[in-house]
Image (cartoon, rainbow, N blue to C red; front, side, top):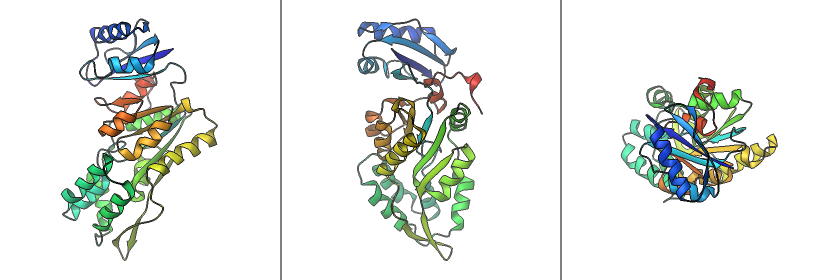
Length: 292
């Protein structure tokens, strides 16, 4: 048994649900009557058949509607591993640091290419950090205060999952000077990220080894899952860049959040329109049960 969860960024109508259900039937699925999670915002359509075929038939079918197709069992996850930049916060921290150095355009181009999977992440990170050499350490606090904004829905997602007995881990290819604060502000249990080397109050232009990249993210997911004794189906990973692909593919539910094309293609589910509360709807949790 599978469930297709339709999630609106604005308004979900009965006609939208009918369109999705009809498309599933036309592809040979045995479809149940839609059930509202939150009327006008999100609903489940249960079905039996082929989940891969179903996803291809209805994902992107209705404008402004995200659809998550998954097994009906074990929807409420017990482990979340999430990326930070452009996922749990609205910015790429290294790009914003570069702005204070007057080289944002130069660094942002490399960031974009790395996130699209066109560059080796670790090499691209070292090259970008080298360009920040000599930037005053005090800029970090200024950047956090002026630029870092929590992604809409992040607080509700993490705090609701934890209230239901889950564990949440932030794993970032960014830097501890941002990730540790973001994790504390949102409510993560743990944060794993890279350390910027600083000397005499200035950025040294280097990052401590080993670098947290795609392999580390996947490893953290595997280790946390093993420690908690969870089956794959109870794990959730969310990210937007190419370095998130291994953990997204390994998780029971891997979500590409407003992601780069390569990441979206690799994920089990994509959130392209809504905010992070879409993941709560994907778990079948109505807004009255969210912790904000």
